[in-house]
Amino acid sequence: MCSSVCLNSSMEICDPKNNITMCPLCDRVCSYWKLSTACGTARASHLFDNPATVFFSIFMALWAAMFMEHWKRRQMRLNYEWDLTGFEDEEEALKDHPRAEYEFRVMQKSLKKEKKSPQKMEKLTCRDRLPAYMTNIVMMLLMIGVTFAIVFGVILYRISTKAALYMSSSPTTRSHVQLTVKTTAAIINLVVILILDEVYGAVARWLTVLEAPKTEKNFEERLIFKTFILKFVNAFTPIIYIAFFRGRLVGRPGRYLYVFESYRMEECSDGSCLMELCIQLSITMLGKQLIQNNLFEIGIPKLKKLIRYIQSEQGAFQEEERQKKLRRYETDHFLEPFGGLTPEYMEMIIQFGFVTLFVASFPLAPLFALLNNIIEIRLDAKKFVTELRRPVAARAKDIGIWYDILRGVAKVAVIINVSKTKHTYLYV
Image (cartoon, rainbow, N blue to C red; front, side):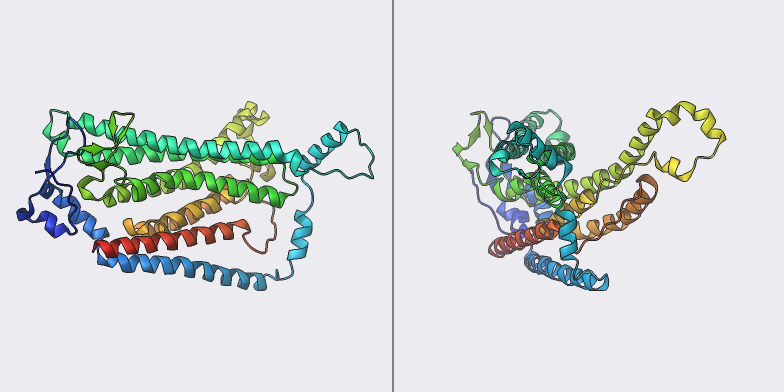
């Protein structure tokens, strides 16, 4: 008997009386399977998807909203303690000074129009920026399309690899097909995310420079917004696909949906995608924290410092340097220049998304985020003291556009957790 029934309880799945025969998960090489074989996965899924998940999702939705209110209160308190309540006018005056790149573009425009009179002040209009705006839109859509294409490629990898492993003559290989495919696909997604993060950061900066904002404040805000959009889509597209789309576009027995007329769309194994979502989220979150946020932050400045030392004039006189003690400013010359706090803020924003958006499928995410932050505090302290040049101090009344981004992520988190609560309530 071929059935596509999805039972609502792990106890019913594990009951030997309900030994239902299920349709094959792929064509030709996959065979019919008994629902009772999914007992272990169903019990593991029940740890994350049970009546307590409703209360946990509600708690996370309320926590996200209360976190933003607490941050606003803390920010206003710091403004008062640091005497920044009247700093708005001073900050605007400092940041309204035109950037050198903007003035250069204005000068080029004046020379083209042969208006060299110093009394006539030229400025870049929307018409002057129209090619840059169009390039920004096209490149942003192209980069997002690249992310979607890679996710689609990983889908094809899962489908083809699953079929190939089911053809194996080894019983052990066939019995661990699902776990092997899930884990390797999640690792591939992680590697792609780490690579594209660096590419998207460079692309966002190039697009912002091409746009030629007038002030440093406008430049920083536009750069942050573009970088956040690209990196957020890059990090969360595989997770969003598993959470909302996988298993809903498969068709029905006898009339399945195919891609390229050869690849049948993948279903949620054992009737639920929750474990796959948990694996993908855990590998992506832990991988980004361990590799990108910790290893790269320490390793890359050290590598650049070594390269700068070798390429400098001092590198040619290593023997002499061993015999004399360099002055402090001479040793600081080999340190990495301070590039701003944008990477640090971006890490926290992406981590805030991992903790709040899909935390119902991976309840340990807040714990791992806490442990990561405890470790990263010490690593960042070491990096700023020993690996980077001393930054120039600057006053600011708030965190700028980062607060608006945090508030947007918090609102999306409330919506997703509410939908998760509704889904779990109906499921239970």
